[in-house]
Image (cartoon, rainbow, N blue to C red; front, side, top):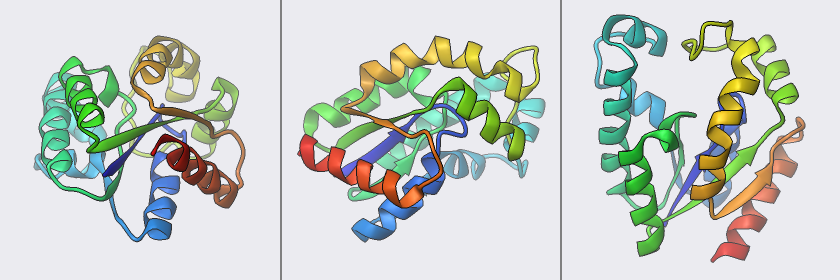
Length: 176
């Protein structure tokens, strides 16, 4: 079974996913890396600038389809992946078949803004405002979808990564 981590940018999907995969002796996959491999550009921002959001989203769907074909992985999805109807259909089919469980890493807008201000990373803007300033708006749009597709919701506020991984493991044991 695959474990899919969803949530907004800076919610900890990659950091926590790596630790969870290590603890469970599973392969870790960052879906953004898989998508990026399908383009000549070397950054997400460059792909968006050259090809646009639509091309990136199509790449996410295809990457997710390929990743879900393999078992026993911890997969960090892009923040927008669950918003794509085709990706959501793939996720829901994997959940129904028992091939995947979805954990939503919930963070407050204040926490996300703090993290993004400290480490902005390779993130394109999703609105007309700067990345840290768009957090509340994007979160308000996406959170209902995250909640809808999640098997469990984990409070990912704070910096205690080991404690957060323990919460993820506890949630997985309750789901299974």
